[in-house]
Length: 188
Image 1 (cartoon, rainbow, N blue to C red):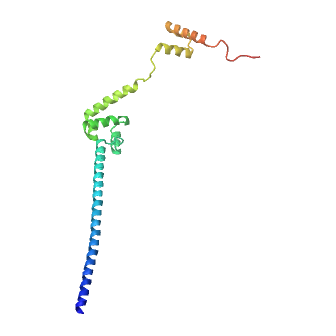
Image 2 (cartoon, rainbow, N blue to C red):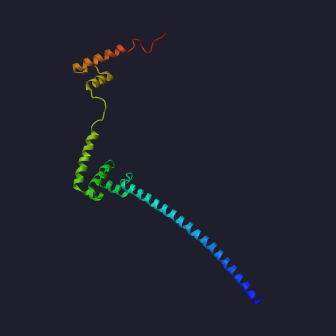
Image 3 (tube, rainbow, N blue to C red):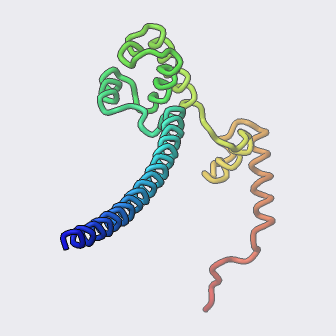
């Protein structure tokens, strides 16, 4: 009986060992599947990270290549410019000089060469502001004729004979174009 029990136990043990091996192989297969799945996810994440890094480098390269022009000077620099006597319409000139000379703002404002250029810039702007910007041609004779007709200047006060003739001719021309009848008829 003992042999039989041993045989029964041995078959049970082999069955148990086989079932443990099956369970272990199932667990092993599940773990291997998880490892493969995790590796695939890691590869995908690595590719996404590389792509994002590349895009970030491109954006950094673009932002470094073109600095924004919207903020030319910060508030401190603006205050410094104002106290230095530089007006708002001269800021663009100051910025161009800073870029050209590669000097910081405080050194540039104190530079004698810059002071001379700023002075000449102000003088040229003063000349531009002083000259009239009319688009009409300057025909002084026609303007004088219109002026004297509008003011109804008596001809005796005008000394220039050519101007008198022009005024008389213009008055005759206007009287021919005007209506012969009055604007306010009298009805009784």
